Length: 357
Image 1: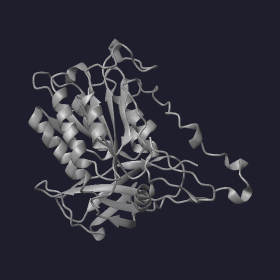
Image 2 (image 1 turned 120 degrees about the horizontal axis):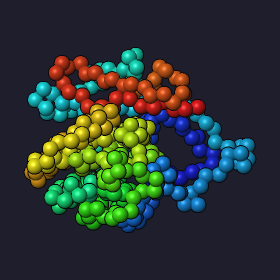
Image 3 (image 1 turned 45 degrees about the vertical axis):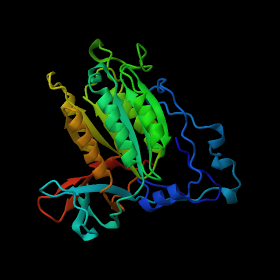
């Protein structure tokens, strides 16, 4: 994981969502970038247990600093919303302006203070691969498509990690800019790699030990993505059937919302099997976080699914606003984005959690 440097006397910002200008400046100034922490196929910590930071990175207690060196707390409340717009032909629209958008929070229109339609803003991605038994027939195709995706999408200043999940959740590659490291992690995925071991505290549903989908999303968000800034997305390759997680779907969605992460689901459907609750789960996770679900049935549709997600990740507008509701109460605020062109389809997150005092 990446750890921002801490320097006494620097003004710290407590943000509900970081302004995108700061994010770009922070990433551009990070030289050299921290080396990704090497992680093998061992199990992740239990859900909710954060990965420990190196002792050298532990911040000093402000109470122990000289008064002149204590950081000044400046509270801003900028909310950033990343938006993709498609026309009625399903083509992405890239020529809209600030005046074409309206943003509402809990039904109240907000003033758009910041607008950007740059297509090369840094990305932070978490690629989650389902390696349960139901994926056995398509795992090689998953590996091929995901490998091509990281080589095409990851650019300078972008970072990604790779996790697999079946009976447990495994971190195969921590945040890195190197597509080759990511491909190596993707190629190392194996069906039921965790064997008989399950995450401590995991309670199988209905007595069945199986796919820890919700745990994987929860861990990716709370332990990894929550400390990152800017555009964050989770790409999950799965049939969206969970029968082993400790966390619930509500826990997974809330963790993504608190981390400001969008969930895109590549929903792998076995034509020979009857559909269970997977599609409903996939749509719930994507819709509540501003992502999309793409169904795939074969290798060709899997390749096309990655192409669609790649195009959308590189075709987003950024809308920033200062919410009129300034209460720091930790409540969930609903967001609605409108475009002044009838028939256009909007993909954006549905809300965020306000900071808590």
